[in-house]
Amino acid sequence: MVDSRQRVNRKELVLSASPPAADGVARCEVLVIGGGPAGSTIASLLARRGRRVVVIEKDRHPRFHIGESLLPLNMPLFDQLGVSEAIENIAMFKYGAQFNSVEHGKSITFEFKDALDPSQPYAYQVRRSEFDHLLLKACAASGAEVHEGTRVTEVDFADNGVLAATRGDDGETRRWHADFLVDASGRDTFLAGKFGLKHRNPKHNSAALFGHFTGARRLPGREEGNISMFWFQHGWFWFIPLKDGTTSVGAVCWPYYFKSRKTDPTTFFLDTIALSPGLADRLRDAQLTGPATATGNYSYQSQRMAGNRYIMIGDAYAFIDPVFSSGVYLAMNSAFLGADVVDECLRDPRAAPRLYREFDRKVRRGLRMFSWMIYRMTSPSMRDLLMDPQEVLRLPGAVISFLAGDVFRRGPVWWRLYVFRALYYGFSLASLPRTVRAYFNRKRAIRPVEAV
Image 1 (cartoon, one colour):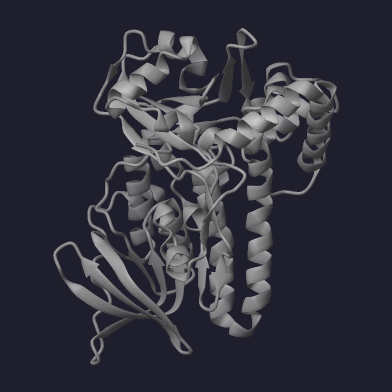
Image 2 (cartoon, one colour; image 1 turned 30 degrees about the horizontal axis):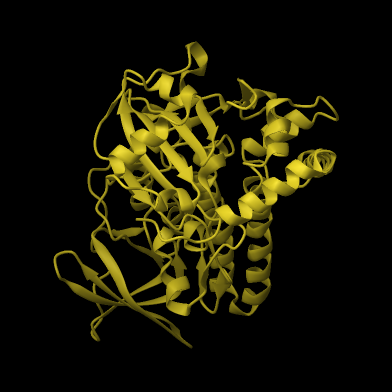
């Protein structure tokens, strides 16, 4: 295995290892759209298996990206990619997650060491610009060919492969022929848009407003790097400490609240923070490092994630909500699953339908588990359960395992999470009038409203 320090310290990515043939078309086995965590991961894995892989990335790294909090189940994936040491060098240790509720007048911290499987007792907080760049360099060092500052402008599928056209930010155009296409284009959802497969998630709808602060007051001692979540009347906030002293803070809110904005985004963001006394106190002496940024359409899904000679991985297929910091883990996990699918399809195209079905089932399994909790995170019964854990059948350990990302393995976590669901429904029935009010309030809240 190549040493991780050798892999990520290369100064230059491979830029032009595939010269065009006589017909002007460059050839590869796998063309990957997107060089984020999903695209870099699947490209690394396939290149190590001897596949000729080309990654087309629209930006030039390092580039800004939100989503800085990782999960403990990311750690084994880093080990398999050989990048653990390099990531640790840029990371803040995250030993747990803190939930803050004004309604309950307290906060509670879930530590990953208390999971049913305590083998992954921590995770990381990272600057995504550094993290994503590191993974992209590792992908190039593994043998993939990377083209930054380049967009895929057209894709067509033929019996003998995939035809694609690209345009660089210098104006250069190229044509490609690949045997297989991986869409890891993130929220651009390249193929889902092309095929008309993307649709708004009818069960969830939110938008986010975020910024970076210096001088934020963090938790003391060992908990300094823990993520904090604050509920408030229009949604929830994240508070993510980074290694360089900066803290990422964001508000994820219902669409109607963003529609109410009458000021510039930065003023609106600061006014929104003031609605959460606990968070406002943590930011009392802090300063924004730049203007606040808003993003909408936070929840969507595609009708399918695989088809003839292609798969979609990570956010190119679906995105739910960042409340459990699941984005990077789900993206990288789908890349690991997808690498097996692509490799097998290239070896035996006749197995593709079966492989696609298995891939779909495995990816949806984790998404369903995260989705069930996310849809109910603002409900009174869920807040009651999280703020006052019931020591029955080791349910708190199962919830912590869930928070760590342990949603794909069948076993003791799964059946306990279903018991937790039953407990949630029991709490909801016991307070039926409150539950009914919360249901209709949420139904009104998720109605799509154009943010301004």
